Structures are given as structure tokens and as C-alpha cells.
Length: 159
Image (cartoon, helix red, strand yellow):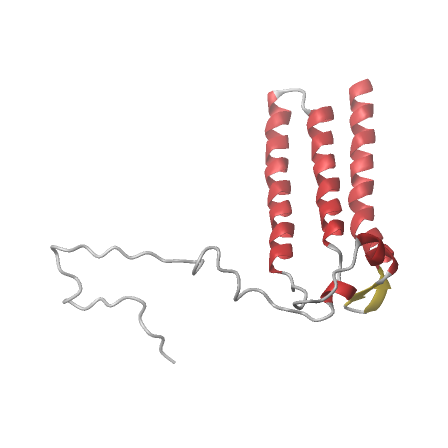
């Protein structure tokens, strides 16, 4: 099956006196996210609370701050930390992009508070777990990494 040509390249359109400036737009309309939004009934009462994602980003930011505070001693280390920082910022941007493109609650649906999220159910692929279990699954590994980075950094500074 043939596709339609994007540009009209007939001799009439390619007049030498008038150069044709064409560009490729990857994002069709910046700021118009209405067509990307998907209302999902029940997501406000059975989904992950946005504060949990904020905590996740905060734990990674604390770990990055620990890296800069305890490990940056010379230019070579600062260069490596700059590369690590860029990758972590890209990771944060992916999380933020996922939040922006995530399913939105249906209009008029009650948004539960963080304590209600911790006590309430969260739907996952294999069934239902509590919000506390979801938060622990999301935050435990990054928190352990931040604590270990701090311990290793303190040992490095002392020795």
C-alpha cells in the first residue's frame, strides 16, 4: 500500500524565485494535550497517588545530592558526576512525562488523600495490593541506594 507524499514537489511549486521552506513537526501542537488525555474511571480511587511519585523523585534527588556532596573532590570526578546527573535528570523527566501522560481521573471523581491511598487498594497487573505495599515497592530500593551511597561516601571521606 502506497503512502501519500508529504510534500508537493511538482515543478509548479518549485519556483526558483520563491524558495519553499518546509519543516517536519514531531509534536503537532505544543500545549495541546487534550487528545493525549485519557479519562479512566476509578483511577483516583484505585491508582497510585501522585505524592508517591514525588517521593520517588525526591529520594533520587537526595542520592544525587549525596554524590555531589561526598564524592566530588577533583575535576575528573566532577565530570563523571555531571554525566550521572544528566542521566538522572533524564530519568526524572521520564517519570514526569509518564505522570503527564498517565490516565486522568474521570471528571467529578473524588481524589483520595495520601492517607487514604496508603490504607486503600491499588490495582496492579497481577491483582490488587494496598497503597502501603505499592509505596514500599516503589520507594524501598531507591531509599536503600541513597542510604548506601551516603554510607559509602562517609567511609570515603573518613579514610
